[in-house]
Image (cartoon, rainbow, N blue to C red):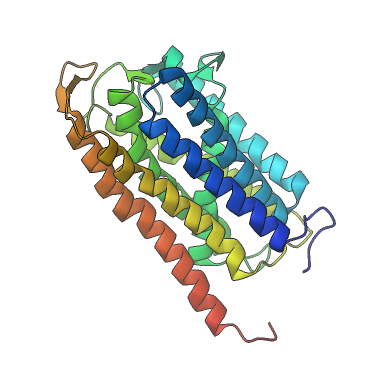
Length: 297
């Protein structure tokens, strides 16, 4: 394995840590979905988010090294918080909205947990985009250094399309000033998500392309971990739909009424054809590339 000195060793220990984080996330998420106690469910949700963040940090460190991983984390959290605070103050780029106390303690106008969530879903989307397009061949591989952020931003917005109507219209964790056509969520929110994530993805690309130390080449199993986690995250939406069979009428902030069952069923459909599709494409691209790579490479 080649790479910088701060790259963490890959192997069974790293793989087991990833599997443990994925399984823990699944356990906490299932508990939060099916347990009716609000406080315990909220704690389980927080622990699931923590497992997601830990997976992404450790998975990244195995390939990029701890220093670069923490820099990428800082870039994502900083840019996400700038965009979030800007949008809450001005309406650009996500639209006008506010976070409610249900989202937890805040730093300025944004819940503390928001930045790490942006980083985590962004990191997995970035990894899937790298799997689909292939790793940059070097600092001069401009097509991939520009292309990966474009593809990664599309992938991460696929997740947001599934989650935002549930968090906003059903959960009231954030409230838009004006309702939108997609179950109360405005189009600006998704355009803003693309802009925000593309911004920090492109910043990651500039940073990594400027690093003289090569990035470690990883075995296919390493990449499959990210695809598996993204697929499992997608499967929470069918589980949510199954766990909430009673349909209720919910009004958004604009006064439009939506049926909760329709919101959840739409999340199921979107998760299949955005999130599961991205996970499958990434895993298949790695498998095909690995098969066609000469053994001596």
